Length: 115
Picture 1 (cartoon, rainbow, N blue to C red):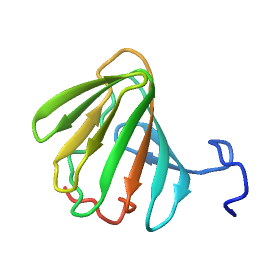
Picture 2 (cartoon, one colour):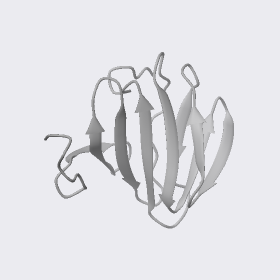
Picture 3 (tube, rainbow, N blue to C red):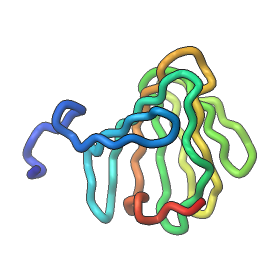
């Protein structure tokens, strides 16, 4: 896909993660990744960290519980937070509604994930 094409969930690469969660690669390069993700109620990702990558989370809809180094941050629609390299983190949807958010990572994080 060239960088001149419109990208959305209908034509982006889809992947499964966590507990029944979905992700779509809106931008996928070594330097930068942008992923739209959806988490059903009661779902969660795995506890992990990145040695080099940093994540910027932005909530589009719903409520996220993002645990960073043992501290839980509640993020609602329009909220964002930066997770720096080395910080152990886990995202959870502890609400009764679907959670939809963006994760912007620099550099890409998929080859830099450690449990």
